[in-house]
Image 1 (cartoon, each protein chain N blue to C red):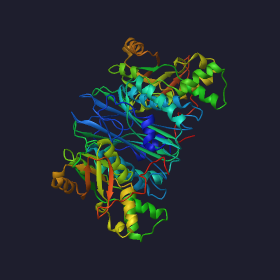
Image 2 (tube, rainbow over the protein chains, first blue to last red):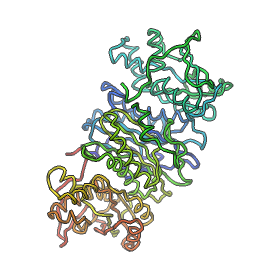
Image 3 (cartoon, each protein chain N blue to C red):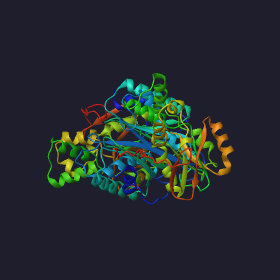
Image 4 (cartoon, rainbow over the protein chains, first blue to last red):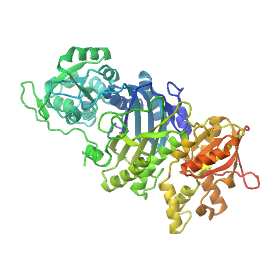
Length: 317
Length: 317
């Protein structure tokens, strides 16, 4: 099967909202009048972003999910995406599963694949997503203010727990493993929550590299500090059954969660909870933004927790 | 050096036209009011799109050039781009050269890098470019009509000749090799020509996989045929010094040329030549579009030339 047959069989679908889709030199997309364009790009590499054991369908889902998560963190409404796929060889079972998972999530968000590129090479999945947002209303990392409440969506740490099981560092029974494995392999981007937080959240980021690292981006760009209540960080019942030190590491430094960490004015708790309900995801207050620079992680008694783990960095081991 | 330091040192630059650039979850770009967005994505993989001998500066140039070439083929004005870079390790000499070549071309087209992603992995360079085009004015592959003249810009075949020298299949003296090597490693995207052809050309594609293959896309999507005069296909003096069979193969099936192949109405020759002059690139008539499906390649005497070479396909050898 050649490159063009492969694209036609697995990636060409009826055109949706795009003016011109796959098959020409460029795709043509018409953003809604007056809207600004939000753009993000994320690449998945085996061993770094997924294990060789991942079912292709889940990998297709995750490749798009991590990109939609960036749009969510900006409060942008998804519009379209492109896919650059490097494959060692044409593996039809892989392509069938991958494209099924990819398009299931794309359909759920009513977006379409408008352009792509397939090449022979070590497996590499590059997606660029486009969303739209009203001028001046994108959620940024730079808007947090002292006195704002610090929030996070969903629960954190399950993806990291699954990774530790895969690595043989912990064990879980079958059902529990299936659940945390799904969190790792098939994260749900919080697109509806991001849109619901427009005009309400003062800053936002998605939790991809670990809560401490991603919150750190907000602190640096907003030039504020924060007090984070480690025991308040929401976690699943499965993670709650692990030793306290494991819970702490998985929730604070785990990564691959694709939840939103965000800040909102102190008086906006009810509005934030309403936004969470409207979006169908729990939101939890986990701390307070402060004028004093730096991040202070405290335990249930208010004593300091000293994080011993670096946030994930692709070029550090 | 970590991922974020690497981005800051080599890829973060003062913001230009973008509303929000590198450093947040998304970039925010505001297209000009009423314009549609042209999007294209192309990935470069070592051994497929470049050789390990390419100077990093030229590779940075080429990675962006092949993407700008897609915008040119649509007649779109470049706006911005994203870069997804997988690197086996942090190699500062490589990154310094690569980013220098990349930004030199970006600056020449006054576009900026608005988003990116760096990961550890086998070398893979993925770029997505955004351009803008007035509604309904994009050059498509589907607009050619019987009776239209067939045109190509610049000269074809030098990049393929250089590849054959690298492969040890031909030899050239030093100066000639330097010239064709530059054609291969540092192609010039025909952005100005593409814009000048808006409203004039009836179809266009860029020559990336070889003239016959890329012209084939126009024929299929326009549902027309063509008569192509092989001896009229423009070539450099260096290629002209090669055996006739080599000239034929390099110009018709070489690829990596990044010139534009396009069609225009029969009476528009003067206007097409004026567009070429305005854009600073030669344009040459090489054939005629016909109602009869299929491509007829003819020699100087009008006799048939039977191409023996397939156009480049990434999944065929």
